[in-house]
Image (tube, rainbow, N blue to C red; front, top):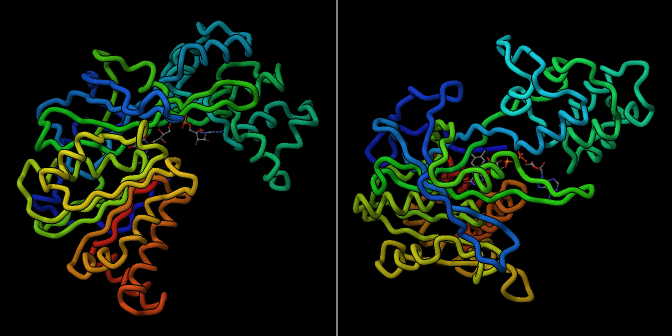
Length: 397
Ligand SMILES: Cc1cc2nc3c(=O)[nH]c(=O)nc-3n(C[C@H](O)[C@H](O)[C@H](O)COP(=O)(O)OP(=O)(O)OC[C@H]3O[C@@H](n4cnc5c(N)ncnc54)[C@H](O)[C@@H]3O)c2cc1C
């Protein structure tokens, strides 16, 4: 899920975008990985990497844009599915465009064999028809939605075909059962004003253990494990005019970017630095532990020392007994935060949509209410006005 709140902004030096649309998700650019390094330390519970990839002359992006990465499934995962289905991969199938390809290719680059969708379970049961096992039938239909949701959580296609084998008779049937393997978006973490022919990303490698198996996200896993320097990856630029630096280069900005939410703000800051923009910059970054999870620490400290980052606040939740998050740091600084808003500051949020974005919005509303001696209702009106002026922008996923 991605949400961006403001409408399309106009094109200007600071906010405009005019990137080459020659490459698209259907006709991606093959980009060479130039750097792939771990940002998190050995003590971290997470694995977050920094990737630099080469772009062709004319492939232009603007801070706030994202990069689409087209994944392939891991060989091990593909082989496990082939084995469980009793095929060898040389079978011929028609892809989504009715082009004939091998079943191996279909499983590698066309079909989403990763995280299981409820719709796939339904389709799979439909294929089995009357002969479907009772336990499989019990996962279908509107009445069993909640049970099915619980079943698919943490499971992949391999789990379904292992538990309920013998249903797929023809490889082509998988095109009715599985979703397409789709590109994933990553906020661009660099400015082209600083890195002309490059795009840089901050990627959290999704790994988890569920139902007795080690699992990984298909695309972040690819970037983490199968994208060494020199590797070529199919990518495309994705414009996001709803997440842009202010047109007024002197306008102050407040950036809330915990975890990988930091990515576009690194781009914003590099951009303002490279172009000598004078607006004040205030960054809130949060993660679990300062020792292992302070992403781009040296760069941000240097930006703070040089004065580019007017203010820098960090919140490391696990550094002390009581968890501290970015919204707590906002509350601690609410008087000054409100003063910045009154000065016309733009307020940006990027990162986790499920909890962080809501908690940050609540802290923002409380800040406004407190600062203006007003009610929460008045604070909501203030925020609505900010949205209208494009001074409240979110890119959350
Ligand atoms: C506009 C936008 C910008 C983004 N920017 C960034 C960015 O800068 N950096 C970044 O890292 N990501 C970013 N993302 C997220 C990114 O696009 C991917 O969604 C993310 O990398 C996971 O994709 P994947 O292919 O690795 O995992 P998938 O194969 O899609 O698997 C992820 C799924 O695995 C399941 N899962 C994950 N953890 C568990 C668990 N513990 N237990 C059970 N199931 C679990 C969940 O169903 C989850 O949806 C962005 C997304 C959007 C929309």
